[in-house]
Amino acid sequence: MGGSSAASVIVVGAGVFGLATGLALAEAGMKVRLVAETAPDLTASGVAAGMLAPAFEMALDPPAPDALGLLLAGRDLWPDLAGRLGVALDLAGAAAIGPETWLDGLEARLVALGLESRPAGRAEMEALSSGLGTRFPSALVTPEDWRIEPRLALQAMVRRLKDLGGTLETGNVTLRDLEEAACPVVLATGADRRLADLAPELGGLSPIKGQILWRPDFSPAVGVIRSPGAYLLGSGGGLLAGATMEAGRSDLAADPEAQVELRRALADAFPTLATEGWVTRVGVRAASPDGLPLAGAASRPGLFLAVGARRNGWLLAPLVAKIVTSAITGEDAGRWAARLDPLRFVRDGNGGR
Ligand SMILES: Cc1cc2nc3c(=O)[nH]c(=O)nc-3n(C[C@H](O)[C@H](O)[C@H](O)COP(=O)(O)OP(=O)(O)OC[C@H]3O[C@@H](n4cnc5c(N)ncnc54)[C@H](O)[C@@H]3O)c2cc1C
Image 1 (spheres, rainbow, N blue to C red):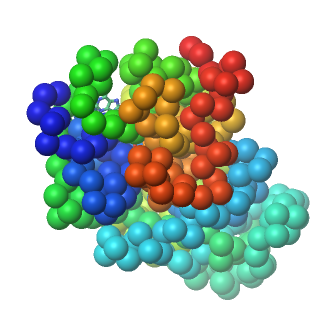
Image 2: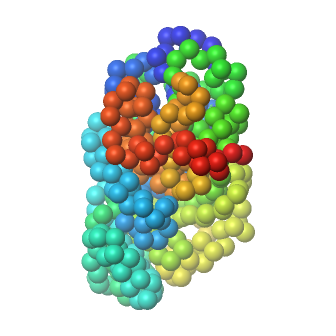
């Protein structure tokens, strides 16, 4: 890696965790050197849908039973971060469509969580899905879930990091590089576990492959719409539909067989949507044993972690960045730092590889 003496902190990884953390450290006055093997656009962060969705995530696939406060805390840091980055935040909310019983169950879970939602009729649904046509007559809308355009946000993070004197290099960081580092190092290495010999906490991460479908040629004005087994949204001059959850897989190959359920769910909700013309993008999420990130000091002195985002890396990035930055600068990390302590599994004896 060489030349680390000029930096006051090294961040490994240029996904949303690495960039948000690098940026927060630079904003705290540190000289940040960010090194990553993969360009931001090609990371899991670059292929993600960018939903900032505490409500529907808690109601449809909660990362942990006690995660709501954490997810809301992540979301609520976004307006400030998006403002500093100069990127738009879509605050229009998200809709869910599906059979009545499914919608009723969803609404009941949102109510139990104390989250806002309201029914929407056919006319509003048609406006939301811009004439795509849905099989279902009614919908549920929540104002709690927002969205950001991932690639624009990543580019803006890189720009701001450089404006603040930080650097971004392409390279593979090895165990030896870390042993030789003369300043604090943050590992924001996603689902990659090659550095687990130095940070055993990484050994407890497991990969979840995600395939997301993109129609670059087709841009109806569609907001975020969830349905049983799928979501659909308009993104960057195209349409995104996602996503598979393939636990234990970390390859980046397009796999049509694993998309069958997703495509069926899409056809179910949007029978008029063409089944051809979709491009597959693939990313690998990293899941910790309790579904929540590892953010803060690792067991090795001078080493810090920002990993384990599962499905909510975009949502949680500003909170993780704040916690890791506070751990390095000695500021108060706030009430969620203990819940995301990277040592919680090692201490409990279940974090090894
Ligand atoms: C299809 C899909 C849709 C998603 N949709 C959403 C969504 O709507 N909302 C949401 O909140 N989340 C979503 N997610 C989850 C989110 O994308 C991830 O949680 C998040 O991107 C993880 O970010 P990260 O920075 O931890 O890792 P990554 O984005 O994977 O970045 C890891 C970085 O580490 C680098 N790296 C690893 N090892 C080394 C090494 N030894 N040396 C140098 N560099 C190294 C890589 O090159 C890369 O730059 C989605 C994920 C997928 C796959």
